[in-house]
Image 1 (tube, rainbow, N blue to C red):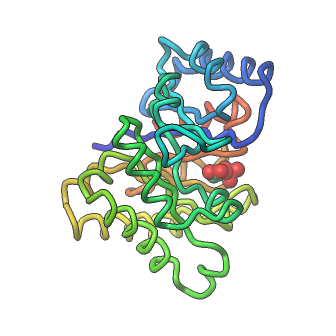
Image 2 (cartoon, rainbow, N blue to C red):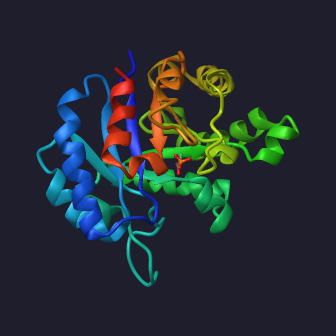
Length: 250
Ligand code: PEP
């Protein structure tokens, strides 16, 4: 039985004040969250505040990116050990915004997965097709390519110790959600691909859906057999909305 995981991706949003309000709200509502594991992925600079505020609670936290390097002359970068210094559990790798806006290719994303895992973080690997790719009918090909890059780099067992987030790029931040059936089809394809390598990993690995998941559509999406949680952008910025998604996993 896979425990669903709901993770907020705050992206480049918030302030010290707004984050305090948000986390106070989430903490106050966590008593109602029965089934899901809950995490928030914050901008680097707020991680010390987040760690202080979430220490001893049931909410985990993480980064949104990391460097492949351990330390040194890499201005502006943050290493895995720095994330661990603030007790991060998770780190997102390969978010489509990193892939498209910052040129992160499959090989770099795979390296980031490897570095994060080796350091002791749990990587949340984002994969997913653009609208153009979906319209061309190559959704599965794209997801398979993105997944294969990580399997080739770290092996199936190590991939199995992370989390996958299937995020159709056309659904991210657009208000256009994949239908539960569309999402389930791709999740089942991903699990099938994992099963070709290792049935145990396929059975145990959690595959989140991400792309305009909100309080109104979460229940239907999370009810699908192969959807094991959500990676939530916009709707993770309001405690009430985020908590409604967390409880929809019950
Ligand atoms: C995301 O950024 O991972 C995401 C799913 O964003 P949104 O929920 O806003 O579409």
